[in-house]
Structures are given as structure tokens and as C-alpha cells.
Figure 1 (cartoon, rainbow, N blue to C red):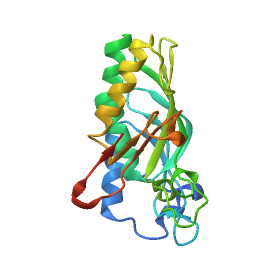
Figure 2: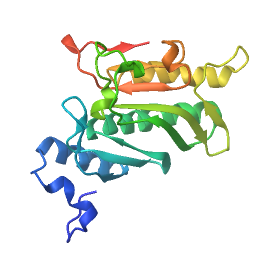
Figure 3: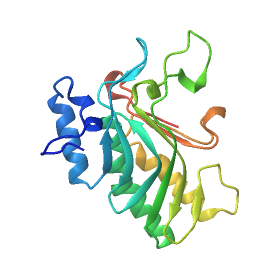
Figure 4: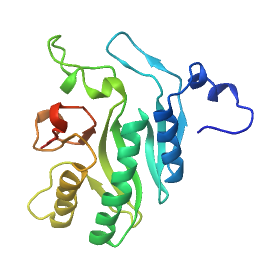
Length: 204
């Protein structure tokens, strides 16, 4: 996070260039929400991959751990934090009478094409810009472990919670994918802020 006093060397790399006001405002909102994050050095990996002002997310408001910590851009971090606080945490509390202890990401920044394709004609993934996050499991404070894998017929509460994830998250992200969307997302949810014409969203 940005500090008012002298900065240690690990905290300086993002100040090599003046941080745009949009990035400063994004970080201020994260701090206001109690999000735990650290600025990271600029990521540059060829013409198609990189994040100018990445952050490493390790915790959310309400004492929710994000483990392992995940590298993202600030904008998708903020969208994720808002969704968890306003939608996911209340849904878990309603169905399980328990808060969330931990969210387990399965991916953040990664220089690759969509669906891990090796075909050069496939477009780059939003992960290549740190503009996407994948989550594989939600661990509640009562010890219950909710895995994202598609639930069976008798997993009523888990199925209802995961269904609400698909519905509610579409208000915060431009793309939502998960079990049933395609073969690549059978075991996790994918959220990103990919811009589309007319502000169109794709939630499957």
C-alpha cells in the first residue's frame, strides 16, 4: 500500500513513473474497504502481456484471507472486493450462518491465451493483463469447504450458493464462467473485466 513516510526499496518500483489518478483512486478505495494488498513492480512480458500497476491481493474486508495471494490489476481487484463484500459474504451467511474464512484463487496474472490454447490465432486471455481472477474454493469460518466443482443432486445448499455466485457476480464483472460453461472451467469460476461493445456482459 502507499505509505506517507520514507519507502523501503520493495515499495518503490511502481513510482518509477507517476501513477495515474485512476490508479491512485482505486487504491484509496481498496484501503477504505479494508482490503489487504501490496503494490508490485511493473510486469512487462512482450507486446501482449503485462500490468503497468499490479497489486498482490492477500485479504478482503471482514477478515477474509485470499490464499495463495494473487497478482491482479487494481480494477479487477476492486470489483472482486466489492462483490465479495456485497454479495458472496451475505449469501454464505444466509445459507450457512457462517462468515467466510478464506477464498482460494486458482489464477490471476498469467501470460497466456484464452482457455490455455496454444493456437496462435486464439486471442490473449484477460489473465495476460491481470484483468481476471479464478477461484476454486471458499472456506467458511465454521470449517465448511465449498468446492466450485459442479454439485451433485443432493448438494442443495452448496448448489444454491454457487448458483448465486454466477448470478450476482455478473453485476460486477463483464465475464463470468464456471462449471458447465466449457471444459476448461469445470473446477473454478473465472471473473474478468473484458470490455465489449455496448457494455455487453457474458455470464455463463
